[in-house]
Image 1 (tube, rainbow, N blue to C red):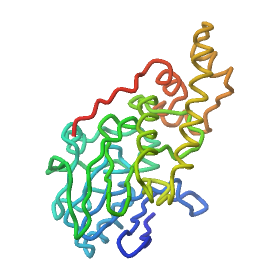
Image 2: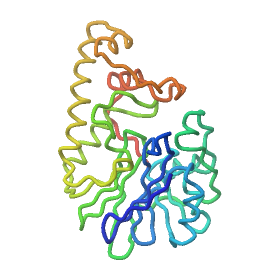
Image 3: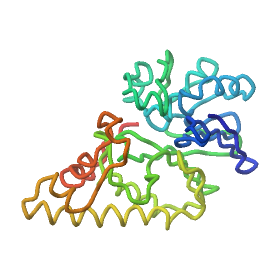
Image 4: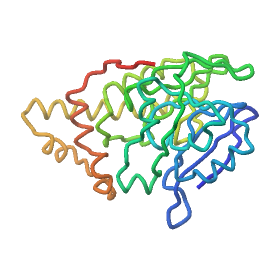
Length: 274
């Protein structure tokens, strides 16, 4: 699926996804166009439409927030015509993407390897926009966002979880660090949060705080149960956490125990290298 939606005179949403039987997307993966640059590039299942868009859009640069397939998988539609930028530790993933489980090949698609990827700068400009590269670790240790201080906009990728009640995680996620990042975002001067899946969120503090509060509440309960000697399985049962129907189809890339183990044992330590 592919849609282009104008947010305002400066920002255009480039929405990609895979359709369900009812014609609705499983989930939108949103890239943002500002002038002749693109923040992220959408998912590879929309590659044909992205190539058509690239033919007429005159995108000069693509800035990748992190190397998950729904954010960088569309880059091959723009390369080599556009310069692709990513954090240095993540470039090897864009050049040699891992083979995804079948479920994720269906949901997002298998990315095509890129030949040329440049190291992400500390900041960049387009027109009168001046973007600062902001570390947003947690969902991915090297994830970044892009902050435009004059307009008070933050392009936040997946720094703020889409579900209000997050209790499923991938093995690379550090949930305490994710909370720390959200707390930092909440303290920033932001008028609009441009989320990688939800889209623009005006006045986002309540949106962010709801997710912080849920994770901290569940962490407190999990820690108490852990101190009582409960196992991860017993903690999951005591908290009444049940996975969605599709969780086994992910080949356990998404798991509740990943989330609980991270809450109990990970530290909110910044590990970012831009």
